[in-house]
Amino acid sequence: MPNGTPTQAPPIQAVPTSNAAFVGATGGGPDGQAVLVTSFSEYLLRFGTAGSELAQGVRLFFQNDGQRAYVVRAESHVVAALAALAGLPVNLLVLPDTSAQSAQAAANRIAGAAEVCERERWIHIVDPPASLSQSALEAWRSGLGSLPNAALYAPRLRPTAATETAASGAVAGVMARTDTTRGVWVAPAGGNGTVNGVVDVTHQLTDEEAERAASAGINPIRRIDGRLAIWGARTLAADDPKWKYVSVRRLALFIERSIDEGTRWAAFEPNGEPLWARCARRSTTSWRCSSSRARSSAHSRTTPTSSAATGRR
Image (cartoon, rainbow, N blue to C red):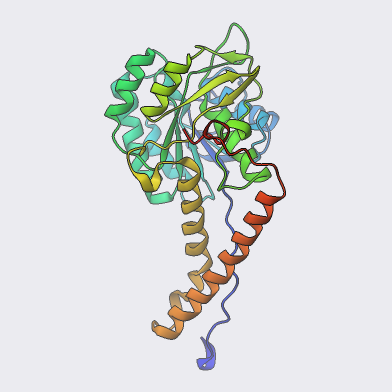
């Protein structure tokens, strides 16, 4: 505030919502560093192998219209490796190697990641251990507790009839596509949840199984009317009315992060009611504009209203 003149408050800019971070074993490439890739071919140039769970996740991320991915090679100590992402504009966390772990080891890794996700305002797209049956998966999910910054998707996906892989990379791509075409406030499921780049899921859920999974906080991936799609949009805090849905939680994180980054100019201003009022006015003006754009976007498209179509199961 030179010469006693208050700093001009800049407009609050919207932060990104769908930059993904993939952390795990790659089999090659820089170790412990966050590497930005914007295509699967760029990933192959930097890390050199397409056979790992992580590589398959990155491929499906881009095939489902993801645009920016940070990759951290971590052959072990995966949670500790998340420190490499500090300060980067990450929104979605993918740890596909949990699918190869035991139930307890996977739960421990998810718990460790949850602390980081809460601090950094990330959403963890959880892959359960591939060894779990449907009933065992539901019991395992219950043991994870309430995690508002995490969402679990199952079953696994088949890129070809003879191969399978974790679902998280594809889900991250679907979220990115929905953010671009509809907005972060829209559920990445139902009519918005088509999964590309795979031929099927490893297990076709019956209606009863899908309902039971959704009730347990597991988002099913199903083939409906010939189309493979995400058919649920719940977080792992499904018993918390405030943060029950993925789109609601992600919108809140988006607003929090945008306001936090957009008001940093205020750190060196005199703390008092005039400053509070300026911050409040700037925040209100910015989000009125965002709300107006959101309503305009919604009215410009045909929007399904059924719970099945929106993923609000």
